[in-house]
Image 1 (cartoon, rainbow, N blue to C red):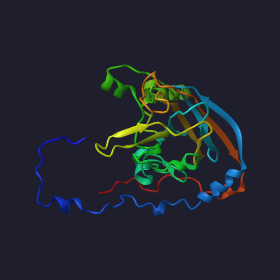
Image 2: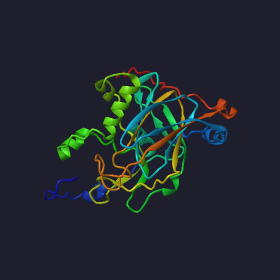
Image 3: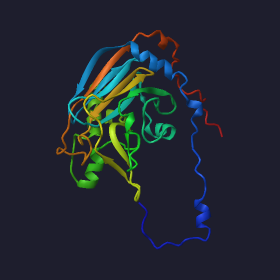
Image 4: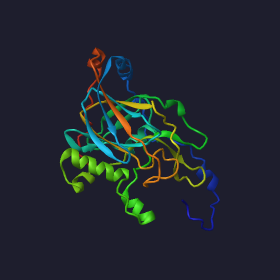
Length: 286
């Protein structure tokens, strides 16, 4: 938010503002030419298990490479915060900032979730989303954002001076610590910015502040992913419920989220390429 100081406007102000926007990362080279293989392979999916995440809680789970999984709304409108790690190296985790730079502020079918440096490879591809119809509303909001970080106890303490332990950051920390049998301190270092599943967000037109509004998700809606590598997933059911009023509180009505896991024996997946780490030499030569 800009400080409202007296404005000293230079004579060439208008010409400075007239520069044309240039896309920072043209992504034509990233087009997933094999996306149709994934889409068509979905017809051979077979559900193998499911996991219910209780309200205001988080759970970690295994996702083998080559499998599909869904995050589903079951009992009522609910937002979830998703973390992803490589099963074999927790330091390879979802990189929301670079994913945002490549795909935009909100993800949908065909977009990928990329991993941190030096790996920089797709962790998952989104293969179906029942909320794709939402698009962009008149407030400039859309669904499934990678702009919000996750609700956390540090910001809650800063803004309200309240210790709140069931925000998504703490939920994910406890879940990862339990799953990997490590301390909370060790786990917290690996918890990262999230995909805000089902969350409806944007930036206000006037102050350009991050805002949330009631999620359009309803029971039966889901977002589906294809695991490009062996993964550990962590999902927190946000204490904000549908995020129509506030988060990091016990006041919002919250619901569970269901994670469904699918095997797929389609021969079309035999043609789908493996997700390989970046080929950059890591030399950083000057």
